[in-house]
Image (tube, rainbow, N blue to C red; front, side):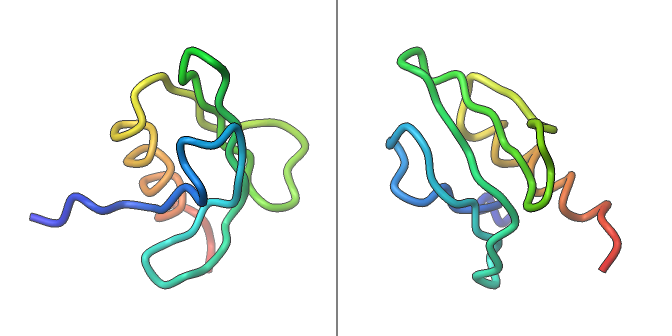
Length: 70
């Protein structure tokens, strides 16, 4: 089973780009001092995914991405 969902550039940095397995930048992430992270897709003005554990956070971003029109 493949557990790699997306890449958070520079994590554990405070922010960075979010990449798919194919290298596509789909948005940005931010994390606070408690590792509470938020994902904002390209072109959006507010986050669509939030979470405190990075693994599940990345999995939810990947699921969100799968539901987006091509």
